[in-house]
Image 1 (cartoon, rainbow over the protein chains, first blue to last red):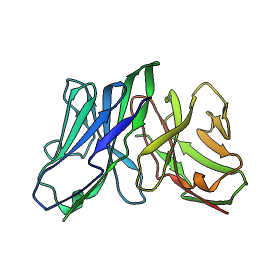
Image 2: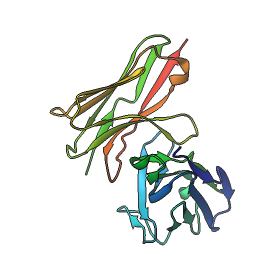
Image 3: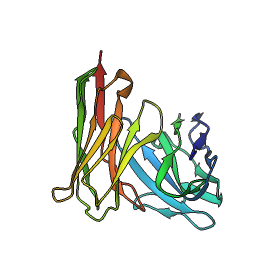
Image 4: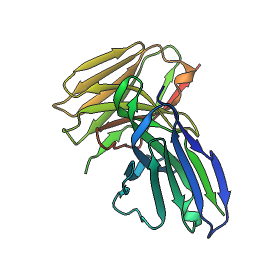
Length: 119
Length: 108
């Protein structure tokens, strides 16, 4: 249990276009979802935290108009990179935390990541 | 803010034990986690320890916590080539904080 999926796994887009990445909790209700960004050979940087039904909380330095996050249901959160530019190219990983069949779980369960390349 | 430090690289031979060390600054974390990341993949939770524990053993994995020194270690017994990956320690509860991770390379 506690599986998180992301779609797409890899996307290449032209500069100036917008890209939407989906994060789904497949077998549990994710009351909180997190979006991270990871550069090559670097750590994960938390971008934002979203609770179902409310606005996302963005970390300092992350542009909320650039990275739109929607957490409309207990199983789905989306990250939209608007007007993408080459510097937005990165590995985006989501994680989820919430109520599983075994009860509430405090740890975060991570998706497999989405590789975004902006040309 | 929270700071997490790990050595960048560790190389061991198959069958040996691996010890990955981590130091952190925030002592208020309720849990301390160890995650594994394989190339091009997300993070897989390996194990975690409550902050009021000194040690936790889970099959080949042993976690030691020295809360006074804010030092956490992960020992992998009988390391296999499939254990080659990047290992992240992360203190936290509401939010996780990650260091750069330790790249473990296991050679046959």
